[in-house]
Structures are given as C-alpha cells and as structure tokens.
Length: 190
Image 1 (cartoon, helix red, strand yellow):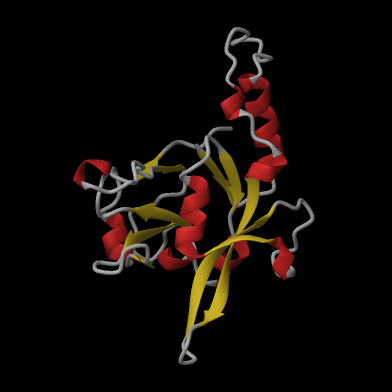
Image 2 (cartoon, one colour):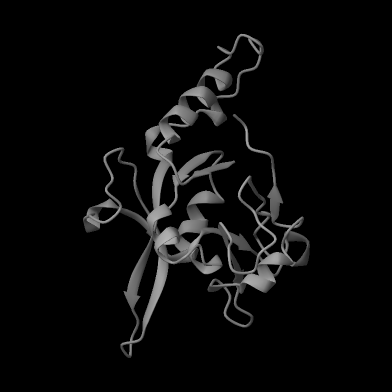
C-alpha cells in the first residue's frame, strides 16, 4: 500500500492509519496489523529531477528523498536521495508493506498539469505468470483523474519494450486508456 499526496498531510494520514493498525480506532478495536504502521523511514518526498545522460541530452527522472516536513521543494542535498530512477524506486515500493510519498506538486503545476509531470504510476509488461519475478499491479485511486489527454495527475510509466527495467511516460491519449486498469477516479472525501 503506497499512500500518495501532493499536500502536506502525509504525517496526519500516517497517524490516522497507525491508530487503525494498532487497534486504537474506536470502530475497529480488534484490528491489529503492525505491517500497516507507517513510520517516518517509510515516508518519502518524490521529486522529478533533471538528469544529464551520457552524450549531454537532458532527461528527467523520479527520485525518492528522505522525508522532511520542512521541504521547500527546491533545495536538497545528495544525502537526501533514497532512490533515483524507476528501477531503484520500484525496488523500494514493491518490497514493503506500506509507504507514503509526498509527490512533486510544484513541478506538475509548473508544467501545466501535463500528464508526464504528475505522480508516477508504473505498469509492467509481464506478470509473475509469464516468468517475471514481479507480482505487482499498480492501481492509482484519486479524485483528480480527468478524461482529458492534456491534464492528468498521473504519469503512467510503461516498461520499454526490449529494455527491461527502463520506463517511459505514456502520452495523455495513452493514459486515458489506462482508466479502469491502473487509474480509478474516486469521489473527494471531505
């Protein structure tokens, strides 16, 4: 379970979830599952960063940074980086029971809500039944999923054919086809 937010509410979400996971919720006093306790070491800031590839061409990659409530979204030091790129990030989120990510709102907003700049969601070309060691199907629930190819909160990333472990963001039109498979619009909870 990976909790995602553009806001500053991740600590509040963690506290509410932890009350539930520890059997302290008044409606669910008998439920306890320590695997669902979200500790600060499992909370991250997700950030799109420019990366210079060999040959000088620019590209962006998604990074997980250590959790910090005082993040100004622009400054960080190299020691803050927990994972760089799709493979490292997937290794973390696909091998834990729970994590929380504060995604990069200012980057998405600065890029006009372009689909490639939103919260990354990964798809895999192969499943465990087809010989892959992966047994994950990423599903993204959000109240801000639109039927609009130019405005997507989710940057759906698909594994490059013939280049296992590398990913690219889908176009807005292709992202629309992921609705109901990897993207589920839900009502806003007040």
